[in-house]
Image (cartoon, rainbow over all chains, first blue to last red; front, side, top):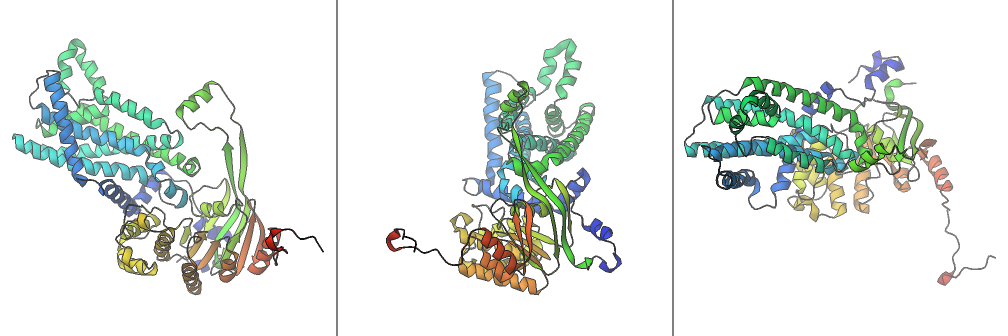
Amino acid sequence: MLPMTTLNRSESMTSWCRQVYDHSLTSSLIEVGRRWELVRALVIRDMKVRYRNSFLGFLWSMVTPLLNMVILTFVVKFAFGVAIPNLSVKILCGLIAWTFFENGILDSCDSILNDRDLVKKVYFPRAALPLAVVLGNLIHFALSAVVLMVWLAVIGCYPDMLFLFIIPLMVIQTLLLMGLGMIVACLHTFYRDIKFVVQALLRVIFFASPVMYPAELLHKKFGDFSAVLERIYMYNPMATIIESYRSALLEHQVPDMSFLLPIAVASVILFIIGYRLFLRYEWQFPEAI
Amino acid sequence: MALQDLVIKIEDLSKRYRLIHDRPERLKDLVISKLTFRQLPSEELLALDHVNLEIRRGESVGIVGPNGSGKTTLLAVIAKVIKPSAGEVYISGRVSVLLEVGAGFHPDLTAVENVYLNGAIIGLPRAEIDQVRDEILDFAELRQFQDMPVRTYSAGMALRLGFAVATHLKPEILLIDEALAVGDEYFQQKCYKWMEEFRRRGGTLGLVSHDLAAIRQICDRSIWLQQGQVHLDGPTEQVLAAYQQSAGYQQQPPAVAEKGIPRNPD
């Protein structure tokens, strides 16, 4: 309890308990940290609700990437006639990382709108909403990664210690997603067609990322310009991230740091920018929804 | 004046809403409005107008007023759901504001799951919920339905569950916003008994309601809000009488004829 008897001036008492409305990035992060149980409860809720009435339940996280892998392998290998060794596992690897990215962003768009009752009626750190969305997708990613590991074992390509690289890669991707997620969540809350714009952009980025094809395919095509174009290509964070996953898991090589380090820094910066934007506009949410 | 007793102090609080007609809600509209330099007509709504308020520890305060007078806005600002346009709010002690009882309830989840979810949302640690879970379900008298999804519940049952969770928050200051309207007489009385017990234990209570009988039962002091301003602030009976009079309420119903045919005045 506050030592009330020592406070004998109204200014000192009131400065103790003044209700503060604006948060800095640090204070918001600390608050979300303190309210981690809320984030966990939101993630659990989303999982339960999504899978409660479905046939396979959370196994869908594992089955969908396999199905997509089969389709894409067929298209690339047979329809396009591209012959690359171990194509299916390369595609699977890129696919699960891409799914994390795509769903992370799309789900973040309406994360605020989906909980409009909460936002209008209860105080809680609003940033918990997009954060919970990204963490939920991270869990799906982890489940799919298990499938990938099993598939690798099946084809005899056992991952070595470098597979631990998956952890910093997941962290980088999570930070990237949280930053972008907060930006689109903010935008979509005010302008309801942002989600369509985001969906269209994701299509473009999908083809600009080495999901359906490994990046080495491009090396062959670009000749003299390959160094410059490669650098530009790798500025797409998902290109670098996916190729890094492939290096560590499939090729047993340390990912190319000249690409990965700038992307890691960029992800942290995006996280900070996205979060601060979110904090700036979060007070307008109750009126906008 | 004993400063130590102040638990809520609201100083010159104002909340302005800018109502923009035809606000661009789609990106397309935003682009068009920027391109055509159209000035969007807007009007300003003053939801709270320089409100000054002091609530002392142990008081129970009723807040009444017509719809749109700012009662919910006032509570929302205290609850930190909305940011004030001007003024300060000072709070001493643990405050719980119930703008909606059962916030976050998801219809597909069971009562038990919703208790945990709602508890997490309003800030109850999970360990505490584990301990009091059965108490909560007993207070709500929903033990036998605890594993059914909440979408199968009636509004009154959901209300009971939400209120039961909120009662275990152990706040020092509790502000409730018209949240009990859906309950039946039995449950309303149960809630009011709980509130009286809360007061006896030294809690401070604020109750926004249109149910003036309840306010008379629970609150010693009342505040009448009108158009965002504190119109009257004093002992409940006085304030409510003035409020009821201004609302055109007459102590006796006017004379009515049988069969609805108006009688000639005598």
